[in-house]
Amino acid sequence: VTDCIICGLISGDLERSVPYEDDATVVFVDLNPVVRGHMFVVPRRHAPQLADLEEHEAAAMLRTARKAAAALRASELRCDGVNLFLADGEKAGQEIFHAHLHVIPRYDDDGFGLRFPEDYGPKPRAELNEVRDLVKEGWPA
Ligand SMILES: [Zn+2]
Image (cartoon, rainbow, N blue to C red; front, side, top):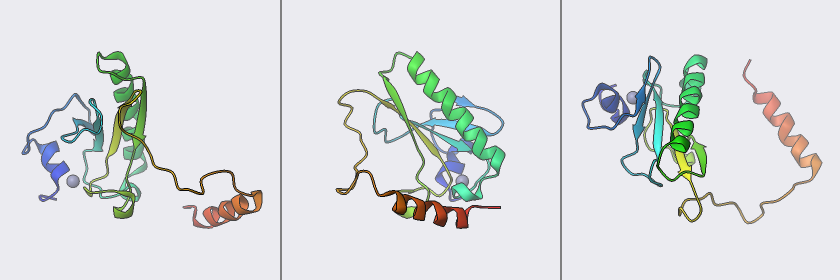
């Protein structure tokens, strides 16, 4: 897919900074880092969303993200924790439709965070079980 920015990064047609790559995945330093050290891991094959990935590609992304997190912690970059973040779908904040897994270093007052809804908190067991049953119905074979 020629108009995919991430495919352009993989091919080297676009300027990029690659700290690691292997047969299945490539890691890029994010052009717009939310925190210094922010990277993302992509599968080499163009796959728009999570469900489009082969299982081995999804596994490879997490395997590489785990190494990226270890690299951040071992580096001189500031990193007291790591968030992995994958936006799957436009409503989830996905902007580039080539699946990618963000690896974001975290530390006190880094300015990044997740916003929780106002009704965040424990829910009744019956509600949790209703959700469980709905998820089970949708579970892939
Ligand atoms: Zn692509």
